[in-house]
Length: 501
Image 1: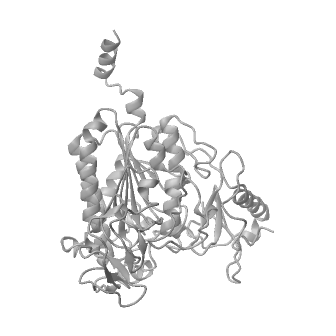
Image 2: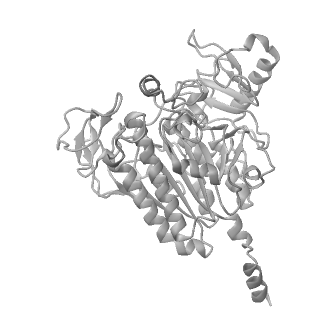
Image 3: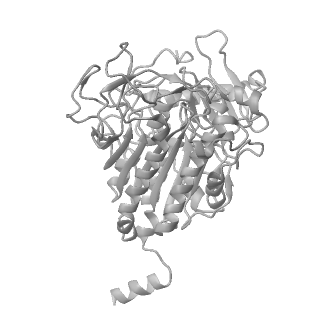
């Protein structure tokens, strides 16, 4: 009787609870892509991104979506852990390739949450959260495994590079070992096709010329990253396709290296668009997203696969030159870009597509952050986050599956610049905090009428200022912005918190 009932339900088109609520998940993370670098978000864009536009048309677009910091390492920490990076020892800037991993052992990540709920998990791409390499610069033993890396943070499989290409070590790593060890050395070379840029490409030298030379594998070349990452992702997913159709879902974290420097579009993309090499590189990036979508269609996985697409921060400072030369605004209508506390530094493309459950073509205007993915996935799985996980993660699950739902009110969102400067966002109000620098004073903006942050209205709104100062102080000092046990941060208060006495 039970078998007959199950067959009947399936024949009527019902998914089991486990299948319906456990979609395959792919998080695609671009690098230094501004809000205005997706043509669906920028009507005046000088190039087209048809596959990003497809994600928007077939999914939901968060028009007020944010990364948790304005540079690589801290944003990746926030995305994977649901916790602000400045609660750790990293108060500003980024890591190199070699460093104790910023994600502490035992801390829940997107990967460990999903793995513990029956998912196969993989990361393919750029890590940039610190790894422990065997030996020291100039004296490595690459027969020994790399430690404190993605395989220790919830991922079953890893293929990629340790960090941005302006840092060593550069090689194609699979698991804990480099396919070809990085036994040679190089320095950044001129890039003739892009603005203020460099290349990492052969020939390399067998001996270092200076102490800070990059360690590099003989077969490494910057222009191969996007192709290799996409090929490996497709290969891994295809290997999990049948299991996924039979109740064993997968999670892939795919952090690309574009359009971060070096800007090196392949020859087949040259001459496309009207924004120079950068536009061509974004067109190439979009094309790889299209390859992923095509593979999902061909394998029959598209319907029950959730794709989340976003960027780790706003556009590199070359956005200024693109405005002058091409009239392309990588930051859209927003102020400044990468590293900045203003909107152009952290308001980024943010799309979610899941054909089985998400009605496409919707725009959601409520404020969300990449830190919110952990709580969103947990709610989807019907599980609660423990007190020591996702301290700054608020679920937006109901807003993506219910066309009538808005984003649930979240605690105020904290923004953080690469130099350590803070801001707090609550509804239409954004309060930018002062720093020790004389020219960085407190500022207040009403983003509902001034999204470009052109008019400081601090003096006209003393009660708003008072309320937001109290809120940011509490969020910082409590060690969390969500309900739960107060736990503090990993360090005592630090110099950037100049408003806290």
